[in-house]
Image (cartoon, rainbow, N blue to C red; front, side, top):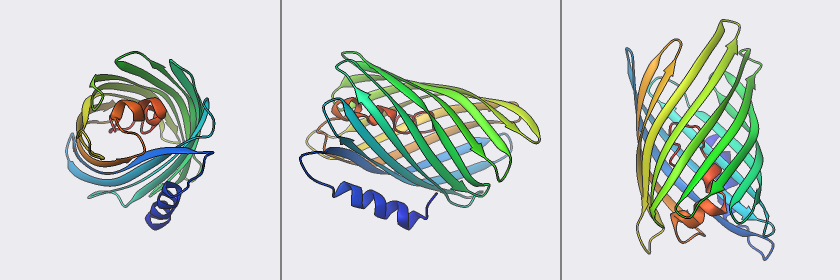
Amino acid sequence: MKSRAVTATVLAGLSMVSGAAFAQTGSVGATYARVEGDNSETDVYGLDGEVIFGATDAWGFIVEGDFTESDAVDGTETVQAHIINRGANSAWGVFLGAADGEGGVGILGGVEYAQFFDGSTLALNLNYGTDNEIDVDAYGVNGAYRIFAGDNLRFDVGASAGRVDSNLGQADVYSAGVAFEYRFDGSPYSIGAGYTRVDSDGAEADVFGLTLRFNFGDTTLKAADRSGRTFTGLGSAFQAF
């Protein structure tokens, strides 16, 4: 990963790219989460953003980055890139990213697919990640069903399942959550909240999240979903955002 300064600089620079070849959209957000585990409670703060480029009517690119910091763990930074192909009723793509935290630099990649319905979206991805410095490999599947009660009001139901292999053994990890996001009509700002339950072989946690987001390019949340944002953050505790 990169330092938070470099992450912010790249996102800011991408947001200023212009020209007929690119139809750019995206958002920048601030997040807060309360993680309540078996024997501990942790506050997590974050900044994130993405820029979506439409190179042609069918092909597009997404660059996203985020920084999170908590009471218990030093800052973690990620950067990820997607190549997507969009049709009238569906989209698919591949992604590759890196994460830098206390355990070292990890690499994550996978494939993704979204099916668009009149008032909802089903999004899925298959992923694999590895961190050689701490000898960890992980793979799993993530999904979210996004329901649009209006163009600027979205409700999400999400779930994930994965396995982590390390020199200490194997662990299965599952999550399920619900969330919403609302964008004020005629405004670039949106707010959201969510809840995710995480269960693994060794621990359990409840995650309560809030977000404030500045959106640019697209005029509604539904338009942003169709342009590619449905793929960003898929499988995280903030699946809605």
